[in-house]
Image 1 (cartoon, rainbow, N blue to C red):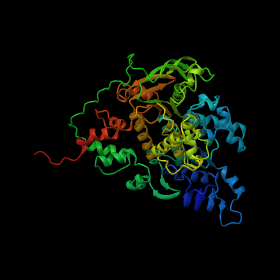
Image 2: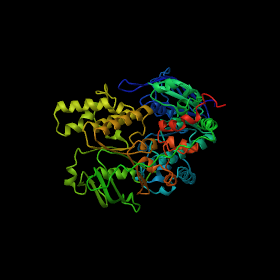
Image 3: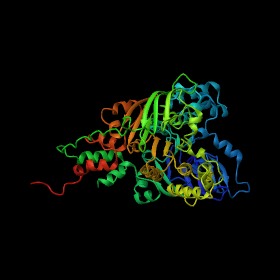
Image 4: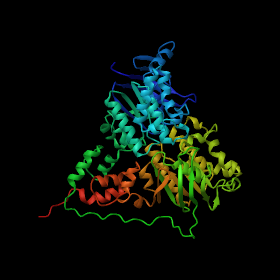
Length: 577
């Protein structure tokens, strides 16, 4: 078989008439590692569903694993029997693991797919153990997946897909909810699968991940607009930027330093090392900043946790003796390995859960009693890990208007707030669209607009940039900066160390406890980096590059890294005689 999947002039429209794919022709070869890029709403997940046999198009032909499953030229375009045969050899890891998990015990969930394929029980046992070990979830084999963190659920979903031993496996944003160690583990899994001859289609918003592919395609409004090797595709810098994407960090750094362009990190590192003069003066290390939060009695925190512990009816504590205070108007990033307690902490800070021990105070009001929690209505805006699940109305405007309407505001004020919120998240013009027909990233922005329309003084966000394309991530950062300038307290859980570096303060959780708490420079300094590594966490990309190059400075952003390197590596204008 010279091709495992072939699409010819495929067009797919949703019931609303929106066109998700338009005249797409694509061949996937056996053993190929194909990466699919594109902004939110470009058609990536729709393409994944077509390749997996979950969606049939309206026009064109689709062949999967030698089966002509769809042909619009036939009297009966869909061959249901062919689809059923082809699906046995194709696996899909959904962007949202909750769409894939079907049982209440982890190992039973991983066994579900092989059981439906009729695999022998003894073989199922072998596969389940093998795949749980592969994704580092063997210790949770008997756990309830609904009680796991988002990242842990994603690992279970991946194990379930791999246990079916598909010939082709499609990964739809598998690392969006994972920490640094988790994403690297999944990339290693993909690497081993590719080495074993598996065919992989990988949809991602992480540009560095695309560098591992044999071939990259880029979608825009349902069409393939770029195709080639990673080096070839990222060489179209202007077009990549116009599409709402970005070059890998190495490519951006090589341009800023006026070195020969490359998106190969190893090649760039060698080029920089070659240019660095051995006798150059070492830049001094950045001094540690004073922690943002002052514990003095005069500075009343917006949120405080006092010796808080919490568990989900299990022996293992989700949080254990956590104490912290968050100053009004500050921005705080909470980071930690998957399962460290980050999302649980947010739910407690939002008064969605009550601690088993200790106390949570919001603007000085304890969340323990229900009648006191009512006083906090409208004070805190909570954007959950999957904010699209907060959507329910028939139109975007109705969804955004729900919160401010329930606050008893006038129709004119509700309309004004909705207009401002939609403008802030760049969804103007989508008023009458169904929120369920938006892309995943647009759904996230719609849910955030609904929170912003209520004008809370505290906004708590759980992985707000997960699933967003590079442009969407940048826009959300800008949105948070804008509302932060207005004195709103912002608390966000993130796996993105570059986002954490932008906060006033970083809180690191490890095994249900606070491990580190301070400014970004304090948390990512030389003394704390070994602890971060042991906890499965990384550092901001710019700092990682500085460490690889042996620089004495501690840059947290691309601009700071360029400033560190600028004078050292640019070719000298003249030589001393």
